[in-house]
Figure (cartoon, one colour):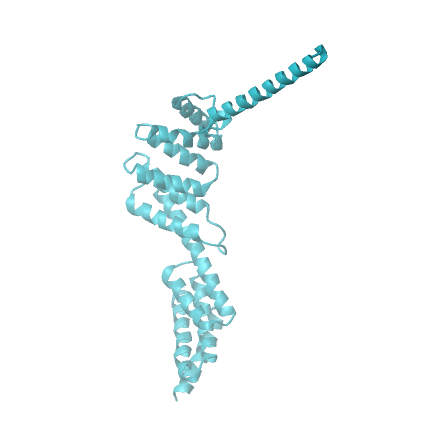
Length: 283
């Protein structure tokens, strides 16, 4: 074997050994990290105490997403310790302050279940309901969060009637009830507008029953007069007298509750016509 050929074989063997070593090294490194779910940027914090302190630092600096990531990692390590409730509360509050209200509500509710006797349980219950309130969309969209907020705030007031959050809680409840009343009114009016008189009658009655004194009560009563009259006009003769009477009754409710209503004059004309038609049928 000449020297040139020997040199080429030697270089090839060395190259193969380097490749094999490198592959093994990479594989070994990957295996050493298997099961470590800590993001690379947080691996410099070697102990749970260091991660907890770093999470608090992020939180106080307003870096809420980083704080939430670290609190989530360290909470299981501190469960059953005196720090556990603080970590879970700050974890939930990081989501809250970051504007992720659904996640905040979930974790604040989780806090109230796991630490019902914590000094922070009252605030957690309030913030869970408030998070749903802050996530409520416009009245014409799905109102799931509005109902969750309403239930949460009402439950909170029952459990903490003397709470320092009472006035804010009541203000939010008024806002939610008005929004739900707006949704109910829009639904009832839609039924009336498309000629679904039976559905409109039920929907307007439900609005008045579920949200008494709402800003939509006056207009609801006015459209109930019109709806009942038009319902009677489009009914079989056997049901007309009853529905004309409903129009007159709704007018009396409007007149009694809103004597200065701008709708009163129009409603009165409709009611008088309804009475005349009812008397003619009965004769």
